[in-house]
Amino acid sequence: MMTDLSRLTATELIAAYRDRSVSPVEATRAALAAIEAADDEVNAFVMVDAEAALAAAVESEARWRDGRTQGPGDGVPTSIKDILYTRGWPTLRGTNLIDEQGPWPADAPAVARLRETGAVLLGKTTTPEFGWKGVTDSPRHGATGNPWNAELTAGGSSGGSAAAVALGMGAWSVGTDGGGSVRIPAAFTGTVTIKPTYGLIPMWPASPFGTLSHGGPMTRTVTDAALMLDILTGFDARDWSALPTPATSFRDGLDDGVRGLRVAFSPTLGYVRNDPEVEAAVRTAAAVLAEAGADVEEIDPGFADPVEAFHVLWFAGAAKVVEAYGPDALERVDPGLRRGIERAGAASAADYLDATAVRMDLGVRMGRFHQTYDLLLTPTLPITAFPKGMDAPKGWHSEDWTSWTPYTYPFNMTQQPAASVPCGFTSAGLPVGLQIIGPRHADALVLRAAHAYETATDWTSARPPLARP
Image (tube, rainbow, N blue to C red; front, side):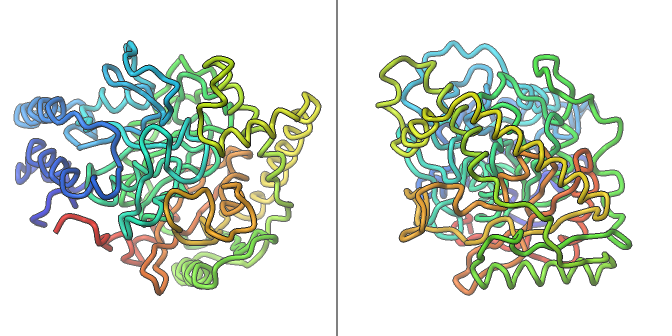
């Protein structure tokens, strides 16, 4: 067994608890030690409650000893993105507009499900202000660095969660994704995630970004992502759009492979320019799935970049967020967020309806596309991580975070499941992500393909330089 318990996956921890070779207390202490070792460099956490975590681990250890575990995640060290309400802990969302005093009486649905399964909650992870952009820095909590190079961004908006998972600061974390916010940092940090079909993970309170916003598991392996999705997907009546609790486990059929699947590979979506090393890595990944028996065809899905429509929908939601904090709130937020909101202020109701029509057409197009192709492969991002504290790479053609995330936000608009798995490294040693997209409600199929790729490669075993020795 590995001596560093912080590097064990949730699945490995559960097996070790079962055979009593490791205890939840030992695993929790290892996660807290990993936080102590590297969090000053990466700023993954906004708060850690070691006392509560160890107390929960002691209770979990007793349950394992007595054969009365609460669920499949009992005793797993876990972190929560500081967007989701967590009972007894402040949810500050990266902004100075929220009073830390609370009160904080309720859990978000995902947090409630984790608590019900007996997960050990370590603390809250960093996010940009209200999760508005694709990197993680905020006026309240500063910038989050990348586990592969702390001077670079971890991506966002779930960058704190991705950095924590990559460095063994808990086996897994729960994030949110309104335009790529679990997939972007997964690609930048060499971790695994899935943005599931909209409504599969209940969300409460309702996101001001509306039906763009999803929850998602953030892990180091596909098996862990499937296990965590099993936990997070229980129906919650507080979410008016929540789907029924799945009748089967997302781990069922995970090993069935991709033989015979019809897979479209679009390296550019028809309109994106990639870093050559990124494109080479993703092409190699597509070939791996072809060698595993998938029928892979290089073809674009046939839509134009929907970024302007996305901006209308996104920043209209952001404007409503900030509006709730009073007439001077706009002057107290991230300057980039303020610029986006001011731009959205020029949009009319007709513009919003036009953007919605673009979204609906995109959904129809992808629905038809998936009548021919079971899955779509793309890069998760066209670039690798750039210096932290910036909304876009230096010298980039746009300040908009969407200008370098063209593969992620379209599939929030369509509400499709989309996973990101590591598919290699550049010559500079930075991770590259492969995005695997399926039709709505085909989450299990997306995970199955991701697992097939993962088992044919060894990228998830790579250890970031900042990980504890």
